[in-house]
Image (cartoon, rainbow, N blue to C red; front, top):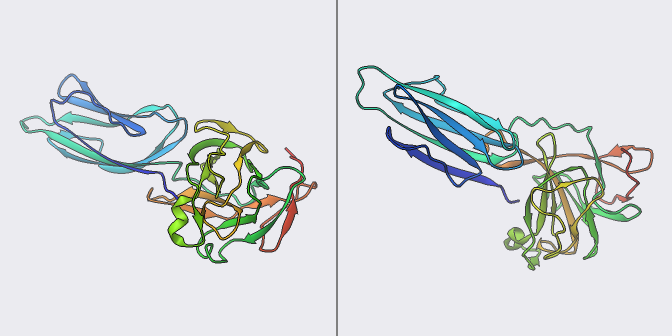
Length: 277
């Protein structure tokens, strides 16, 4: 599982001009008359970001928040720190560093949310690995469907495409192939992510920043990454509060036209029902 985690460091001196960085978040120092500054942060991405920032300050009065974690919405710019020079202090300086990651670290997972099977209506596939079991799912909440190469993979829950990999043609049962899996990652409104993995090379039909609805075709299934047979790996993740990794969570799937849902188990075979909004 690839973690989209960005680590950035920046340092400003007293007389530095307002500056920005090339990461997803842009930090800027805005001078205020009287030897004071505001620190602003702007999210340049079309999705929510979480960040943890730490300040080291000398010779300035501050809001007393030297280290904190927060979220920022898509396209939002906000003031996160005010610095005001202390009187009778000639030497003044401050530095700060931050870690940023896609998603909301405050996300609360709801097991009752509805997911649709990630393939076309009327199609049926067997579950060959389920939650916390099998060779590669001992510590993760994920589902593997036995699925022939070239099968259309569809959206299980609406959201925003935030990450794509589709350049790999390599697949094998060994762990050395794990990072070769092609995938599409979709961010949901509650801050969780769905990951559709082991996709066929160059088969992704969506773009980063594109909104997708239930039933939309994302890509074609394949056998890239750590696999012993063609399959689709599906998992839902949330960002860990430390911002250093994503944690998988269990979900329930709608499995019939009566809108009933359940946690899938190994050996289950279900036909994808029609969308019930």
